[in-house]
Length: 177
Image (cartoon, rainbow, N blue to C red; front, side):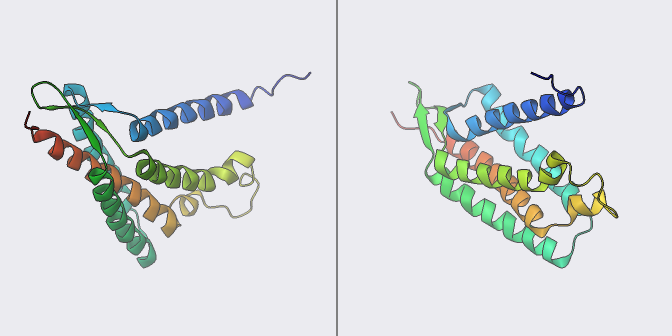
């Protein structure tokens, strides 16, 4: 049995870390989440971070198709967030305040799956080593040249942003006990 090449270790560690991060992200889409102080802080902080990232992505030059895909992605993501928030269940404490919410795993999982599949599609040439020897390869063009990637990223950002705000808004309303 031969040992793994030493150059593979950082790549494998990076892929393992990325896989664990994606697993944690999916758990937030599918499992009950606390609405204590920490949970509310996470729900209010996440949209701000994602909106900053989306702003940076949109500041990069895109074609008209790229901006159109971004607009379509943002509208689609917000619509999915409205639909998902409508199907979110809340658990209430004795005082009538929301203590946990249970997101709809199918809708959130679908948005998550779109994001991960597109990410893997864009990274596949790097993972298989097909781009290192390609003549005339432009990394900047590879990173921002796809309207589909921009659109799907904005679906994810708009979904996360709108869903977080809708959950926080719904959690503020006390349930009559």
